[in-house]
Image (cartoon, rainbow, N blue to C red; front, side):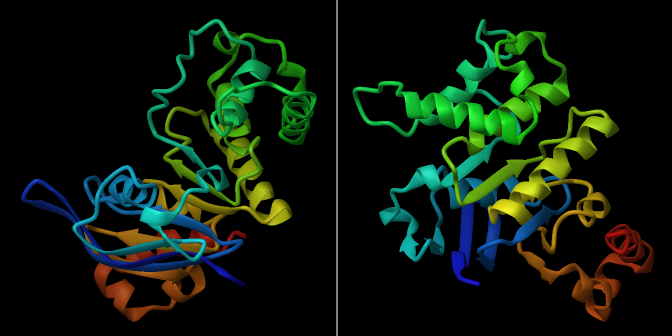
Length: 252
């Protein structure tokens, strides 16, 4: 396995407030990482720092062997933020038009749509099983369908990394399971590395192979199996919470 993300002792401040302190993580190609922690723990802050959306006050971030500051292949990273501010769900656009914007954002001026672009959009919709929605208006779709369309938009550029910020918050249980199964398929069959922020530490254990738990600093990073046998984590979380997380993971 090759290292594609290396976070070295980073700290992040909002003014005088320290949001993250001395966090170090190495993520390898093909990992599916569940990023968890309490509210205000710095989960979204860590992702924004990784994506260059926030400055770091200390440390270094390496992406595909390059420093974050010198990295320019952002098409290799697909990101679904918690609040999809770039898409108005009521905007009069069809599904294929929304997914096409995932390719347009990677193009240099002039931004022209080619036959190959249409083929990639069609292939992505078929891969996610939503090609029958192609000409439907985004505003007509259910929450679960809209989330799959946004996933298609994120993967149409064939990224090597997918990052999600609590993607299932607004989904019903059936839609949530369907969505996670899709993400797991992309991880296992396509080899896409996944980082998924979640508040449900137990549920993510059914899909992720690694747990990254932070609370302004690094609490745990490693395999779920090692977490489940760690006396240090049992002491930190308490036996009940550790058992809850591990029981879900043991259902794999």
